Length: 255
Image 1 (cartoon, rainbow, N blue to C red):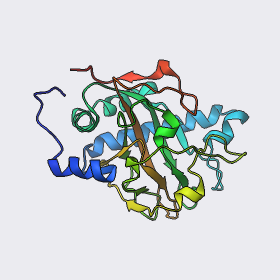
Image 2: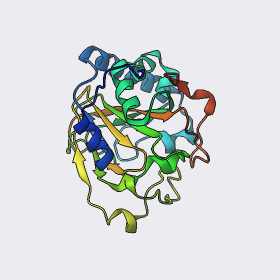
Image 3: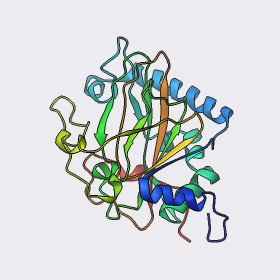
Image 4: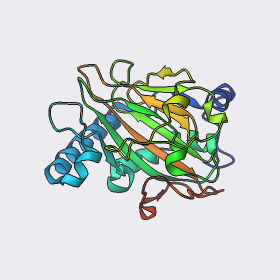
């Protein structure tokens, strides 16, 4: 995107994002792209499970289902060309740059794999606590639904407007130190609204908004890929989890 590129998001969509802290767009990715993403994630899951060691099991395995199932895969944009192409899709990137400015990189990326019939909820959290950008408006997550994300199978929920407030210290249980979350006494003060997303569509959310995902109580998968974009003038100062800076993928240059 450049200064001469037509806007992809309307003034109303931009206003909604500024006010609410999140925005869902209609289908950006076609069915072929999504089918390839699902197939590649399944192949990667099988290879990963075949080699997983005991130290990784707590972090990567879903604990709430009967069969060993991965709950996530890290760094698909760095590791897999198909996801790098998705993260570079001109419409997706154009929307990102309208929202946070021109010149972005994917600081981190994840594939989420909520298996049917019992995959756990993700507690309320703020991405900006995880990444700690020095410009709180300079990080945005583009959450791409690979399957339809519904209330029954574990869609995202947002506490609208909370991105306008502070980033709070998070806590974690002893058995899941990676699962940083808002202190319950703070999180429960803010009502959460569901944000279903159709397959191929994208939910953009501000790094400071309170959000969570519900458990998958359906017989269907709820898979998604999240691209965490960082503006070129922002820096992640002291992230609260470990991220490898060598795996940051530059998507566009500054204007």
